[in-house]
Length: 115
Length: 112
Image (tube, rainbow over all chains, first blue to last red; front, top):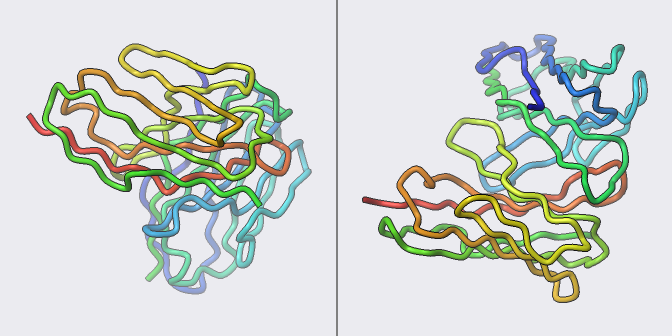
C-alpha cells in the first residue's frame, strides 16, 4: 500500500514564526504536491515538485516555499507565518506522468493554527 | 480553465438507500477522474480512478461512471450505511504533472 505521512497532525504557531511541514512518501513517486483546504474554498494547490530539486508554483504560492532534497521527502515552508495561513495542509504524491493509471495518494493532513 | 462542480452540496438519507453523487467538468480532455472520500479533520482516501477509456469502475458497493463527451461522472453508492457518512470529492488532472482540480464536494450523512 502507498503510504504518505505528514510530520504533524496538529500544529500551533505564532505570527512571524518560520514553520516547516514535512511530507514523506514510500512509493518512489516522482510527483509530490502541497494543497491547502479551507471551508468554502475547497482544495487549492500551493506548490508541486516533479523531481528532486525541481518545483513549480501552484495556484496560491504567495507566502510559501518548498524544498525537495530527496525523492521521498517534500517540505512546505512558511517563511513568516500569518493568521491567514491557518488551514488544513494536505500532501499528496503520484507517479510522474498524467497518464490514465496514475492515482494521487494523500497524507492524513496537518491542521495548522497561527495565533 | 477546467472547473469541477459537484451536486448536491449536501445529502442526508436513511440507511439502506441507494444514492447518486454527481460531478461535472468543463473541459472533456481529461486522462482520468478520481473520486475521494474525506472524513472530518482527516486526509483524502482514494476510492476509485476511472481512466478516460473506461465508462465504469466498481469497488464493492461503489460504482463510478464517466461520460467524457458530456463532461459528467456519477458515483453510485448502493445500500448506504452510517459508516458511509463523509464528504465525497471528485477531481480531474489539469495542466500536466497530474495536478488535480477538485470539486467542492458532497457532504453525505446516512442516518440509522
